[in-house]
Image (cartoon, rainbow, N blue to C red; front, side, top):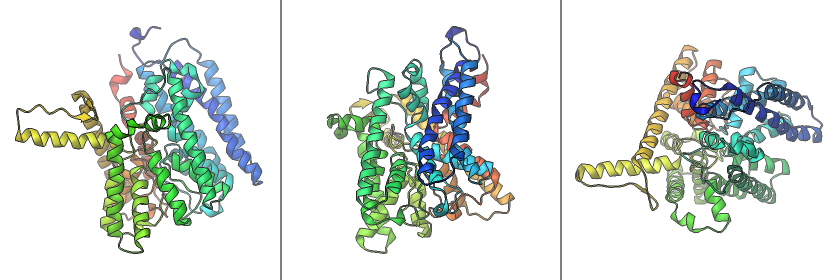
Length: 487
């Protein structure tokens, strides 16, 4: 079937590719399986989903063989279905851990989307294998399931650009190598390298091997899950400073990191997004430190920079229970939830590049009021940003805030109908946190709290926001339009 004769979505190649990914995904359960054997825990929670994922993937892959290639429509469908399906199989271990279906899917979706919002109430008494699975889901989802699939399966390079651009966080994926699968592998090499280096440094600073691996997984993925109930507040200053550095690195464009590691340091000097990103973290961290107003200056600066980096990069770790901070400090954190990491990083939310260009657009419009005849191009480094690109950025930002307002209204309405007391700030923070893949919010869902007590309908709404936020809204919105399914 030729591309120009397609009138509706071609399900066969889409389902075939999703099945292929499920088949490979079954291998992910080997890590927690090994941990369960090491600690003498039950292997059933990981053997069952591994067998189900591999068998279903194999059956569907064989039954949907086709010579048709993926088109633009199919690309949106593959990305959306892949994340839903993998989160479903990833939830099975939690079912064996005595969690309800909705709670298990909530935890799994939170892990793979690197949100870090949890329903676990007593982490200190959970099996080690379950805890490691939580961390590993974040690491797998951090760089992206599609990017991993392209790196492992070079044949996906044909038509894979649409998939990669649809899934990857930020406006565009930089091409680092001649072939797409080579670019995917280069990104994963940086990702794995940062993870290993952080593991070593955390272990050297006094963390156990288990905790070092667990926290390196979630830091580099900007996920925020921790096997400790008190998150990073369980550890000393040296470990917290190490995690600050790696949160900042994880929120940086991985293509920029790759170029820096291969000797192209001049790219960092010219990267306006990276400069704005560092300035935002430093300035907001110092502002928080000044307003905390308790403890030594080292503690205040460390806590301020830690929480600024954690929220801006959407990691979601906590070095202190900021739920107990003054309202003005909470408001600052809520605002920071909308920035996100750099494009091409593992961070979520709107992204630094969009915020930076939006500010430049506002500045230009103010200048044009003063000088109506002036032609003022907006530049990113040495390049002029096209009006079409600016329109896309502004359109995404409007859609993002519209989703945030609608989601907040729906959450508050459901909580009210359920007789669940919650403030507007707490409800808005839960929506901003899940939509931006940040994790902790305020109130019962604070950094030392949990989303477990929320009504099931509210959890379903937040699951949808995590999924849509990780895919940056448009792929999900496209699937809901009539024109997508029609000629």
